[in-house]
Length: 436
Image 1: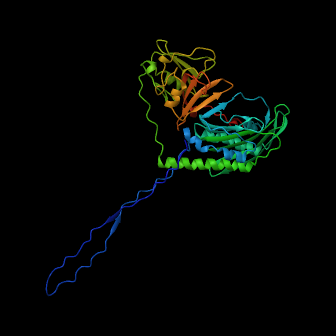
Image 2: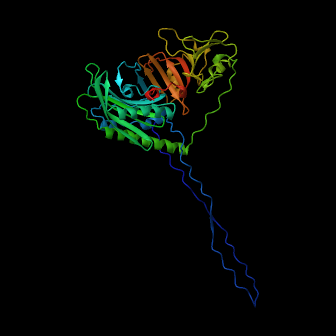
Image 3: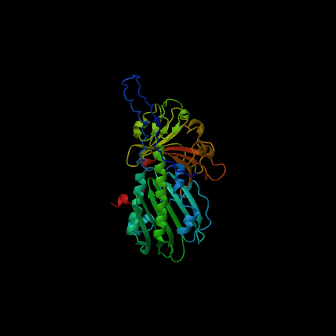
């Protein structure tokens, strides 16, 4: 769904016509006074409605607003040599997430081989065919906060400045690139060449940021590079600037409202009656101290694995239900609350009848039910961990994840778990954090 420009609020005035006051004539025959002059009509304008000040708060794209940042097939073909056979954009994301074992110097250059999507909470993607039968991809990646996206982009700017020449397993490699940093938008594009006899590869690569979003494209190529880095960086930059202006216009006309107060939940009620929402599960609230949160559930059994001190498992007094709570890394604030499982790995699913539900959607329901109840989310597949889930998020960085037993794109995908998460408490994955 494409966004439309919201027309600006225009001042208006209403013309009010005054009554004409006519002087009274006194009929004295001998010395009648001169008649009073007839006054000119007067008009009094009503106060003008002032124009609403332009929105100047956090730039946060959510849901289908991510589509505003996609390039068209023609735009991609105009900057990425060899791109063809474009698929329609989709609300999906594929991650590999298996890391690598190469030695890269300077270390900041390793960001060029990382998956930019790690840590994201929403995406829109488009793919195409590369000339060597590999797949090219462009992804619009939503992060919980603008600050998180900004810190990630800092890494790419540093790499653009430091990695024109670098080594990959002691082999000379390069990133010929252009950087544009203007008007609150940053973009980088260029050609990465890994000159290693066994693992060597060549990619056209581009990434840009605005607000809480990164937009990335990658395209494998053969032969000599023909990408124009400056032109590619400019196309990315201009699209993000246009989307930023569209977002500001919409938020000016319709300012964001504060989230509703959390529901009052009876902690002693059956857990199946607890709601799952963007703020937590039943009486358990995201962001609270983990021990304080656990204490809100009377009679629950509490266990913690020695190897994972930030985790707690709560079991209902009758033993019929359990939820898992995880605190933020190196902290005590509740970051995630899970009902059910994130994956089965050959084990049977839990009984959803005894567990909380989100918007009427529960464990055991088909994933389509969650996608209908919570539209504008993203279907995610993590290859290395064999994970599949549908995620939907808010402007405040809160996330619901509906975990499934198989790829969401295949028929019969069923919900096996539901997680409420505070994305602002996620561990941030940016290299500069440990290079300072």
